[in-house]
Image (cartoon, rainbow, N blue to C red; front, top):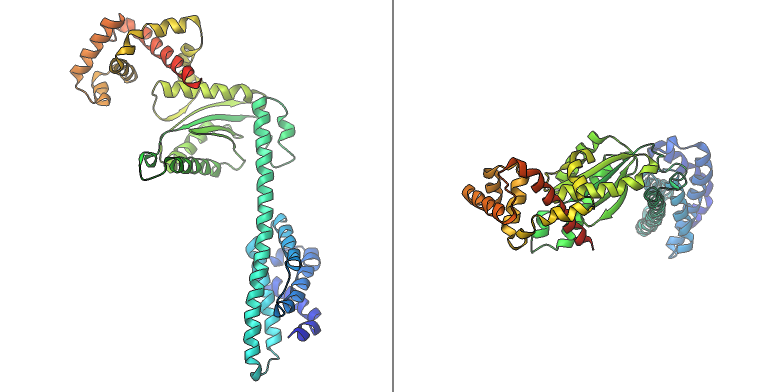
Length: 393
């Protein structure tokens, strides 16, 4: 067998190349210089290695050349399945050629050679897969590095054009800066499921779905409850549709704060989105995508000033009555609708009336009087802002 392969080696190299072009999809579209160059060299090398298998080889060093070749094909965009198919076609051509001259009494030898060929193909395909895997890891690492450098540059407000690299990242004129906050998935409350695992799975589904909807890479700064996204596509309506789909897959409530920003404005837009989402969550707003205009009054009332602590102090007497404070928050959020408030708090509407009267007695602010409502709303926002600030310390 070895002698036959050596004698007809040149013929077999040509026969394998012809077979690849005719029978393996994609090889007929490869440049002729690639067929005549690297592909021919790899076929030549692989055919020379097979006899070594019959003697217990080939060595890892001999196979490493095939790994390097596979990495080059991956870099050129040749699919791995195409390369795998080529090795199997080449083995078939060589085997058919050799077995054509086999005599009946050589059947046992033929079986030995067939088994050896399968062993050889296992080593070949493992080497090829290693080449593609190594290339994939390298490319992904390079892409991740470019994205992280660009993210850091945008958030720092400088050097973003240089950080984007030559072609991997788009030099977007306008970015959509988005702060996403995801609530708890039901699995996170299941005592039979590790909450950390359930939370990470939820966030991975969210990220995968968002990435899937954008052709240009989305830059992520992850957090335990979601993260900050920079999207080189400033269409807010599209973002709303994408987040609706992502929310379904994540299986958890989702809120987002968004604003458009030029590259040099991203550094200021990111903390703004963090503040907007704080307002949204602190005021109990429903799921959705919010811009500053949607929460402008609440946002302004939360800003640090001498008046903020004074406003917060107007409801200080409710600190010893958490059920009254909770009732006031819910009643304000439901638009002062006593029945909706009662439903959310799971109490009778008359209980709401009694609590509102008690709040008026303790604070001097009557939630049933329209002229007191702006002050009550401002006081609630100020208290939520101070609690949030204390929680971050």
